[in-house]
Length: 399
Image (cartoon, rainbow, N blue to C red):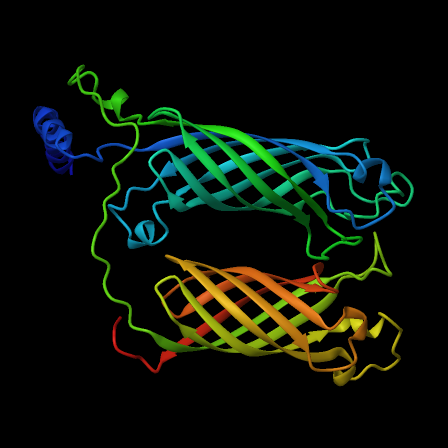
């Protein structure tokens, strides 16, 4: 045993010595690469805007503007690893921190941790038009309490989902610095896991900047002090395989819980579930469109909008149909669906509903999804947590 340990230690020492001897040559070879290193960015934004008002209970807050700050750390893709980088015009991915200040104290001082992607729609020599999405979790809300915070009838939980969508322009001042001007929408909601849950919607502008850097200099300066790596990559464009258009049969089932608007603060959580069947046409690497049927079971209907004694399955179930779009990037898919009710026992929910969520592909065909279903337009109804499976068929010629 001691001999084996001695041999392993000797081997590790020998390997480390050889690696140290070869590193200058490795660095010399790497210097010939235009994209040597890690192309990181630091972003900051200042937000200013107004509430998209949905209640009269917080006029002292919602009639005033809001201010917020954003700080991000990200990675600029170059295309050397994934076709998705090229398909999305070489986006930036990363994580961020958001903090917003409201007038008054009823809502608290919300903050959020999130993931984001910023992708160019059009890229010029200096000027770029971008779109971006950010999703995360927020905290720091001062939730509704009938005794301590009775006027705050918007959010019933301290922790909520944070969502931000933006589009805007960035301008290159130098290889390291950009300035940005965005128009954005921000949404906070808990998906009716706690009521009240009207949600908070913000619309505004954001002014910010970006600093680009390549930390590989710190790793190589002892070997070659004169080595000066690029701070931003040169995008590697490769031939992407032709896409074979096809159809997908998609089945998705979910389960979860919700509270009702009539039993706010400390009401019970009711079981909900859903099942959807989709036909989708995959028209490109990144997207497909579809149409499908939805079936829902919601035990909360026994108490809302009117109490039903000895409720039967038909009293608690309802259905609808939807049109859908799927936007995919590697294993992640953004799912958006516009639905229309087919049954009459949910007239209090309006005529249409939205389902917006994200799927993670465990395999090419098996996926997990979390989606927010709405009622009466964009008011949160409940969150669907579930699994799905897709079956490809009807392949056409590659295009």
